[in-house]
Image (cartoon, rainbow, N blue to C red):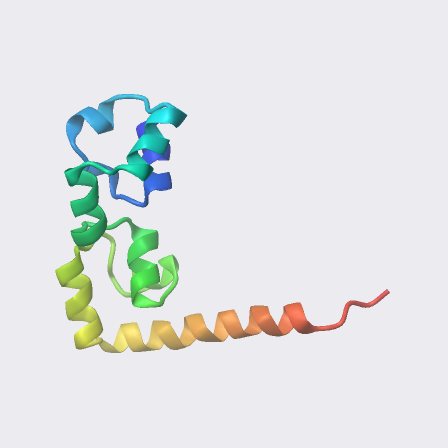
Length: 116
C-alpha cells in the first residue's frame, strides 16, 4: 500500500515520518508488524505528534471542518493541543458546542422509529 494509506491506518502525520517510510510501499505484513511492535519513531509520533488533522480534531472534540473554521490548517503536536485545551479560545468553545449538537442530532435521528 502507499505510504499515505499506511500512515492513515497508523494514525500518524506522514510528513513527520522518516523518509524511508514516506518513500517505500508498505505491505500488509509490514503494517501488522508496525502495529504489534512499533519502532521508537512510531511510538514517539503517536505520543508527541505532530498529529494528522483527524486526530487533532478528535483530541479537541471538534470536526475537521471546525479546525479549518478555527484557522487550524497545519498539524499540531501534543504541546500545542494541550495549550488549546488548557486555555480554549472562543472559536474552540463554539466549535465544540456545534460538534456536540451535530452528534446529538445524529443520535436523535437514529432513535427515531422508522416508517413503513
